Length: 180
Image (cartoon, rainbow, N blue to C red; front, side, top):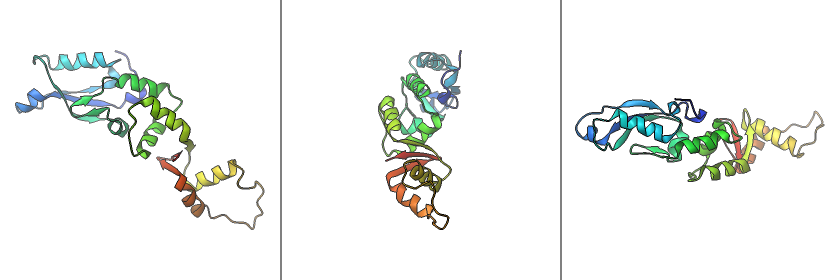
């Protein structure tokens, strides 16, 4: 089996079944999504793991993954989206590091049902990575020409206050900045 998407690299699920759980057993195993090249391979591994049941109803008793996958409703106790590998491929083929995508999803107060829509929305609002709001404000205002290059040395700008006001139109997470 080949390693697939890097955004699935740290995604693992503990797969049990509702039948076993209802019988008092939490038997299952941790499965690493990146160990499988597609959902069908993962599904085959889950069936093999619980081959002692006729029609196992899989239960994801625990999962370790980015908050992005939870917020985008790709996994829950009773559900793992069958398109997860295609979504991961779209993410990995995008122009953005997964950290940027995670940060953007964290800033949003709603989830996108279509990952392509999420990536387009991100593309329209992404401004870059900065060490602080003040750094973001200064760089942004200098780049758009709002601040002359050769300010006299006796002029001081309160970058903290400037950033506070500028951030009404922006949002940030983990050092990544986006336009509202």
